[in-house]
Length: 271
Length: 114
Image (tube, rainbow over all chains, first blue to last red; front, side, top):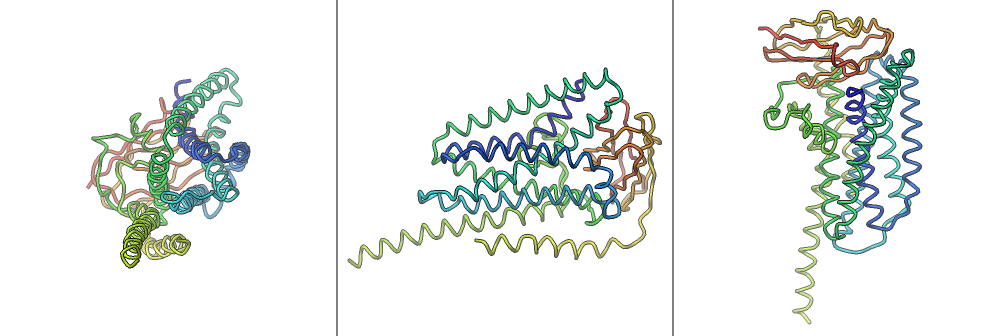
């Protein structure tokens, strides 16, 4: 049962944290929460569908279907976070209404794709007990406990963020979104390394003596930021490619605000 | 801003093209079998500094997930199915792996030797 708790928690945690993050954003900006129902529905049904077709997916594309699909889902979520960050950034200095529809759509995409990928593993895991009723009961209880712990951690994250003042919340959100986008794109590289599409090299560093990936903190950091104790150079390149657009947009914004200030001053002195 | 985001997939695609051109060379293959939630062999010796293709055959009717923190790999292998996992080039040393769905029994190690 403990195995089931840990396995399910590990799978649920990432989606739960993203879900909380986006729920908090919705609450901070008084967006409607209908998107969350759609995201959960599509995510759960989608994960079941992927698990149900696991054989076909694994065999597809000369046995690389599972990795290509995972890489695709990671990519969609990473791009959505980049887009979200770029859309939110102007709100740092001017209070404007958010484009509600497009934001909700992004939220649904992010949560449902994450849930699909992680949830399918839970279904596959549980399917191995279908012919052993005793073991199935214990695995199901474990799965429920694991989901419960994951949701509790999500709830803590949500309340931490939702009670934050808006001027602190937005920068925090942008930093987390940037780190998430980077971490997710490292996972894309990892999938492509696994099928030999990218060539591996020696890891750039090994930080497992500080935080081991299999430790509690390691798992949490993995779920939150895609932490990797031994990343290869190509993973770092992917990380950089994902966070660059957000960083550039940030710099552009800072420059705009600073220059704007300078021009305003000049205008005033001309008067 | 839109322009910057649009170049991201392009960059990724370019990197893929550049790096996949190297992979056509012959890669040594090693096989691991899963039977009764155990890995056979549970210790596999492979050469150092070489890219290696692991063929993992799951003889059990139940699914298993091949996972290794040290190798940075994880892959679900359905019952009766087989999976290909590329690892290396690796430095000499021991790289443990386990079956995430049966972590108590399904354990093994890849020993990389010079």
